[in-house]
Image (cartoon, rainbow, N blue to C red):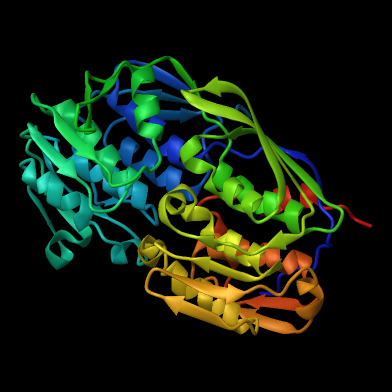
Length: 439
């Protein structure tokens, strides 16, 4: 399909749907708790719907109110119902990894599967520690790939500490909630910080999060419904709209009521270091999270190198940051981002493939890439027809769409990116239209 040439100026204020990472977690904790939780502004992403569907298959009652911005979740408690079919996680790695802990602790066998992309993503990082806790799990490649089969043990053998080899909020979450089914602490520590949404949400569900003297974290208590929960706007989704504010002519985009968790604003910090005219303001706290607004304006950018601790703080935004960097002067470089190789697609390869298709000379590394930006006149230099590939990855697809909005040339993409984007941000195209200034 051809990316429509919408125009080059974007202005306005907009609110995005609830954060996907938080939506997964609050749904799961609501389902495992006692009582009814009313969740406002839940993400409408397909990934989150997979989590909701699996909870429903396991006996949790989830009711969406027509015309209302909330759902009611009637908690089933820690022990769920036997499912009548294979549990399907679709494209959602978060769903698969967190449910690996939950299903391991049930009192019945179950099977968890996903789509072709998810079947390729590594699961041993969560399967191996769960096995050390007594879980009986079988799967393809000795449990490194879906489908996975669980012979529920009903509990875990605690008293173990896990030092993760790579920062992973999904694995950390799985091991933290494993404490619900263990009489002894199950502790976890990461080599560097990842998203801390689970640690922030657990106390709202009356579960205490603790840290020992060696920096290992664990939790105590069983989840109890708080009654209601409001999900802040998704900062990762907002990054694509903010990109239009940065790259558009005479543009200014404000995203409000959006999540500003310190572990999620690496994208903003990176843009500021490149000279981007972007600012954020924390205005309040909701659901244990800082919430506020971000404003991005048309900017002249200078390329930078990004590596080390900032990478986990912007891992999902590296595709759009890389496409923004096309418009910068100097050499843009990303290192220490090997985790991109095992996302929905190999994102390092996908980024490099598309940059080359644009005629940009890019050097690819095992853990990143580097290239020289085209400068402030990039939109004029990119004036031909270009054939790019989304690789079925929602963040690559949205990055391509943003690029197509601001260059003079035409971009053709290999698939229907609307269906690809629905995995995380179904409202993306309509939100872009709301910001478009038609001259």
